[in-house]
Amino acid sequence: MTTVPNSPQEILAAAEAVVPRLRARSAEIEGQRRLPADVAELLRGTGVFRMGFPAEFGGPGLTSAQQVEVVEVLSTGDTAAGWCAMIGMDAGLYALSDAAVREMFPALDVIAAGMLPPMGRADRVPGGYRLTGRWAFASGIAHADWVSSGAFVHAGGERELTASGKPYWRVMMVRPGEVELIDNWHATGLAGSGSVDYTVDDVFVPEEHTFSLGEPTRTGPLAATDALMRKMPAVALGVARAALDHARDVARSKENRMTGRRWAEDYRVQCTIAECEMDLAAVRRGVYRSLEHRWDRMAAGTTLDDLTPDERVDTMLTRLAAMRQARTVVRRLYDLLATTSIYRPGPMDRWLRDLETMCQHVMAQDQIVQSAGAFLLGGTPRFPLALGIVN
Image (cartoon, rainbow, N blue to C red; front, side, top):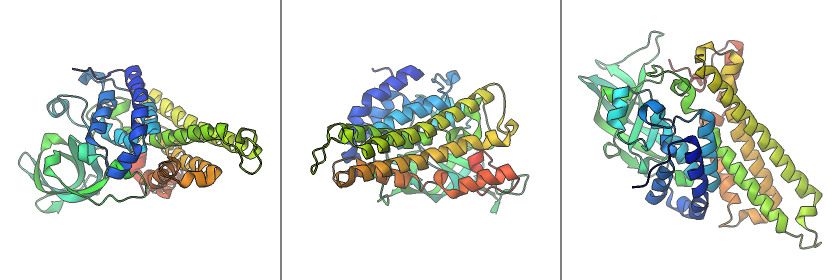
């Protein structure tokens, strides 16, 4: 039996080792509109899905920056694989009780999928809830071990409210066999992520298989509400890195057919490559610096509420900047390579489509910018969850 890597160094090395295999399967992954089963198992074998489990559960407990580094590397091999790895590792970060973790995850290499925001209804019953609803964008659900679904809690037919008067919601975890998949993921990019809709119809969920993002069950940096979101820029950074490496390889060997001049000697090509490297390096460093600062502060006992407003918005803004800047970098490289970019099976067109789709995610949208600005000015954020604010 093969031992799954269980340290930051081992998991990163395993991720690096599978990159060529992922790259060779990219066209197939996109064509199937989901990860083939053996590719999902290839990822499982790297240890990526156990990265969020802390040492007390036998996991490696990678820091947020280490998680980003691993997913970034996987994303240089294939965008959908990186995206599904980033989503699929969430189980170790969920606010479940210790007893529930040990009961639900006897093996730590568990793949999670689903949609955490409340798009369903959970009616209280003895011992738990009856869950019904429809959720969207369930990346990687075809190979998931557990499906997590946010739902507003009802009791006696009425919505429960928090102390502040807002609807109370919890995340319900069910087995894949208890959900029905809707094959509607025909997307421009991230096609291989299998991000289909799904429904649940009156399924019983035990209380211990549920949690609230606003009610942590552990302490430390991985227990904070925003821990689930910190790794999101990794995929965009990895795609931009892969595109830059590809463009550099092309530029080293390509010649202008009209002049015979080598691209490596062309001023425009040189400046474009260098400017893209500059832009990517800047946002990448911003992401890692922000994550390392956040980790150090919270490891010392600081809570989200103890952070200054500038510290609080730092990770959300660097995350958004990385996703948008990665798209800009790949757009410039796409234009640089011109018609070379549009042909399949060349990867440039797929990378651009992947990033265009990725940047439609809420975490790259203007409401994140608004939420940061509102928080800094004492206004009302439109998407408070990005700040780690749940209720």
